[in-house]
Length: 470
Image (tube, rainbow, N blue to C red; front, side, top):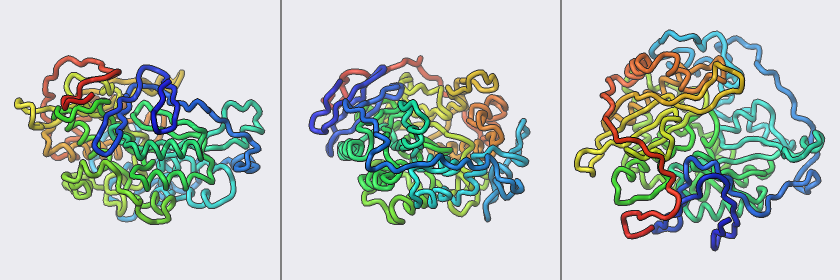
């Protein structure tokens, strides 16, 4: 147990590591260890009673049809004005699936969602304590999962225990003191009294009732963070080593570019602000924006190299109407430091410095990793990423956009269990996959820059930051 002084929370850390605290000029930053399967529990792990004054009587959620009976083009085709996407790839590629005749149910739900609005808007307006099947998928993109109290044994009681988990999106796992304090207060007032650290350097807040979702989400947004993209078929939280070395240029670049990529691949739909903030902008700009202003990411996002990266969709230039086939995970690190488990990510980026140790040269990139599999389903498997190659810093954002576009157009949308990037890389082989990405990128990748041997560093304990602080 560790008492976080002044923040009023008693936490229990379970697993291999605890967050590393780094004092910054404006307060406390929390760098969460990436491999920690740690749950940070409040000593008062409260379980809501079904008879709570804030719980209403419930009926079992309506079971919606698994697939609407409309023609395929209307179900999941391109949006008006959209030129490229899974049913019309910018660069055709032979593979076992086509995505044109059929797609799995979640793709159809996303296609009908009006850019992640429906049926979430109508479900949030009713008096039920749950949301329906299709809304569950859309709500994930807003950072929330619907859950039940699994400690309750009786089905009738579980059906009255619907509650929601919120997952923040915090690039680098950096959580300023003001945000942590707000999360602590929210978890006590609207949640079950705990915060849980995730394996991707973020926080989850559990036990929020449907009627409180808007208050909690808007409060998080107004303090300079958000939940948008914490879950769903889009780029998730971007990871870096859980250390703060302000005088080590390689680590500084890893953090800076991870924040840039988090912003570059965020959803552009205004649905989040419309639903949770009444259409207004958040009161506070995301705290990481000050570190990435130099990149002009709105221009980078919309830049069209003419090779099919930009979809033509009026709202989502990179993702298009149905976003990605499934979740997408990216990590950054420096040579030798494998604390992020680089090879289990969809994309892993390694900072490569010039010989002077100060100037950024570019990035080595790996693709196609992932640990997930379905029990007794041999077509699913864990996989270590392959070396895609090296890109210079000036080409980096376009190369990353090209990889995303390749997965957008060619990832398996027919079988959800096989939708991750690793299955596309495995199916094509790294050489064919590289050639396909190069068509979107418009130029070849350079050879992989040799690196020193990897070491797993858990960064537990106290470490010199290089600036006289620990």
